[in-house]
Every structure is written in C-alpha cells, then in structure tokens.
Image (tube, rainbow, N blue to C red; front, side):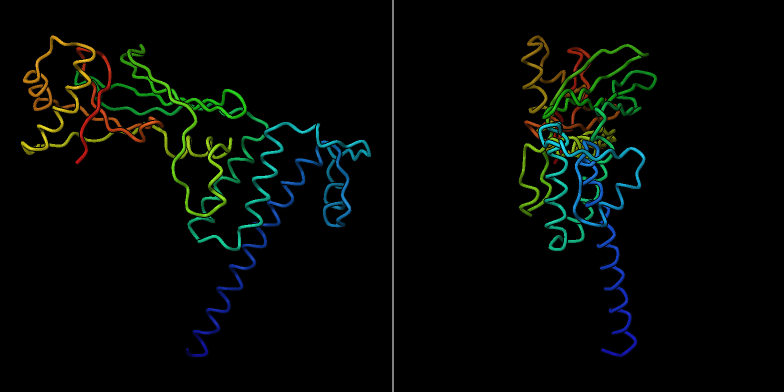
Length: 269
C-alpha cells in the first residue's frame, strides 16, 4: 500500500475511533444520569464533577436502587449492554443501536403516543381517504398500534395490534425479545401504514391467486358474494392498496372491500 493511502486509512480509522469514544461517553453519562436523578453519588471523578455541575443534582447517602422505575432500570441495563457490545458490532448494527439509544432518551420519562397519517384513495370511491397509525405506550411492556380508516373524518374501520417484533439482527444484544424499548423502537420504525399502488395489468395466474386468498376472508363475512363477483372487483379496482403490520402475521398487504367494510388480504407475488 502506498504511503499516502496508508496515511488516509490511518486517519479514517482514527476518526472512527474518536467518534466511537464520543458515542460511548454520551451513553455512559446518560446511563448514569438515570441514577444521578435519584441522588446516587459517584466515586469516578469525571462523573462526580459532571453531575455536581448540574443544577438539578442532589446527591444523597440514602440512595436506593428501588427508587428507580422499571423503565429506568431497563433503560440503564439496555444502554450498558450496548456499551459492552458496541466495539464488536457491524456498521449496520451500530446504526440500529444508536437509533435505539435515541429512542430511549426521548421516551424514558414520557409515554409514547403519536399518530401518523397516510392519505390516498383506499376505498375506490371518489375523493381521498386517511389511514391513521396511532402508536400508544399503554404501560410498561405494552405498546398498542391502532390502524383506522377515515372517510370524510369518520372512522369506518379500525384494528389493533400490540408489541411488535421484527428481526433486529443476529447479535446476542438483539435477542431480548420482550425488551420494552425494542418494542417501541420497532413500532415507530416499521409500523406506519404505507400506501401501495395497485398492480396493473395482472397476469391471469396472479389474479386467480389474489382472488382465492381474498375470497377466503370474504366468505367468513359475507357468504352471498360470489367468487366471480370478487374477481370483477379486483379487475376493475382503481384505488390503492395498504401495507401495515400485524405482528402475529408480519407485514400485510391489503385491499379495501366495501361490501364488508374492511381491509382483506391481497396477494404479493
């Protein structure tokens, strides 16, 4: 390797090392702040000096770990695990844990309650419709995701799922499936409803599979609708599809069927 190229590699490596140290330092301070806000004292000189310069810090010799909430204890443990494993993570995994850390910082002392709006022609009628995705932290260990279809401001369909889990990675750090913060992070990252353009034209083989899948669900709701009638509906449909997550079954692509006023499964080849 030429001297100039070698120097560049060394420089880039050094910059990555510095960035990593800054990230780990921020995590360490935030993790210990969880305890400091309950009065914990510190023997480490840098932490001691840092917190003694914070107006809110009131050290107490009576500090007890039991004063922390479950969310605070889990946050501290999760961040500590990230710190311990950070140097062994891939670039993609580091990006993921940094997003998780940001989520913890934002939601440690707040209950997540946010709503996303997806606007499109979902019902194949004139005018646009709105699908809302509400992500709500009910209590420790439980996030609810509620999808609703609004037509002219009125809710005409709604469904709810809870505690999403999508594969985060092979690293042991990500195998804590019931981690409260993983649930919330994954809900925000993966669960917003998305509009998907209807596929046109549909090959006959694909069309028949779409009809078979959807018609099975229709029969549970309205046995008077024929398969040929549903097939005509699919062929003539000019609206858009919706993709949203139902955690027991993963992400689902669905189509609105007005006669039963609900979204039903749509085949994705």
